[in-house]
Length: 404
Ligand code: TRP
Ligand code: SF4
Image 1 (cartoon, helix red, strand yellow):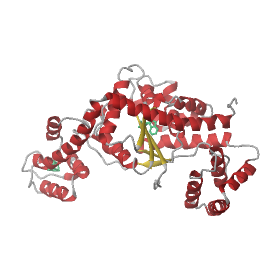
Image 2: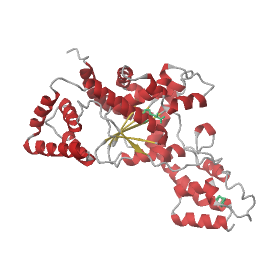
Image 3: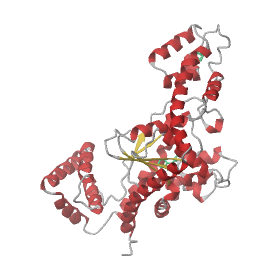
Image 4: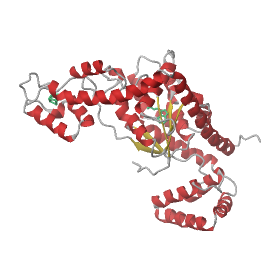
């Protein structure tokens, strides 16, 4: 896993599945909220991806998208810190997807583990479509369009970032070759200025002779922050550094989100499809009622039976919400039958309610002011399009479709 460096660009997305639950929050969103103050972040709603598995009924997509945006804002994503946008409002995603489809072998897509898994899991739907096969490639386009250093995702998306890297490598290999590459790189190096150029040469030598990754990182920072270089020259020097051709689409890295196990009310993983969720903006009474009824260690039938916190989903929630002292109190009380399950759940209820209450009250303001939400998204889309346009200029130029 990558150790994030500051100021690197970060990109991630979510499909618009509707109102989020605590599993989504602790599995992804909370991490995004932290990242937005450490990096330049782009977060988007992958509404086209929703079509790949749900094209028959599209009536909910828009409302689900807005609800998800409101959840994001409620959870603390800050539009002045992170760029929030909608995939389909940035048509460059589709253009890059199409261009990448020209160079992507079918076998790469057929081999992505989620392809067969999902087809088997969602048997009732017809997923033998072109769009579904292309799901990971659309995701590759989503990512490469912004040339991020990091893509924060959970374990289930790692294969998609992996194929993204392969596609980027292939693109650079095919279109990063140009006549007189070395001469052009050397010329660009002159533009860097004496001291910086010298440092670049040193770092390049270090990387190419010893494979020293930190030298690579340092040199990349040198290039990224240099106002004298055009983007094309940056790409040349990046490629020259690594001993490849021009690096038009840099390979992103996974920033693996440490996902705590968030149990649902029935003890299985919290998931919308199991109907065992607690909503991110659910009202207090309903949360309390659900937690009261939440499954515990099944062998603890009566109050006088001892229990085992290690097999109890309620205790998994304590691991997320409670300080060490409370966890100890719960574990000991459980093992000695010193406390009952309702008692054990009490501090948890308080913590969950406080968390949800904070999110809900912030979300309410946006819920009541949809115009503000629309404006935030339209702003974000514009910023995203600016970044996307830069990449597409490079991409078209590299392929030879400039028509200037
Ligand atoms: N496939 C991702 C998911 O289901 C959503 C997604 C689409 C995404 N495009 C992306 C995530 C680009 C990260 C980067 O969760
Ligand atoms: Fe679970 Fe707590 Fe009941 Fe033990 S006391 S079974 S940890 S809810």
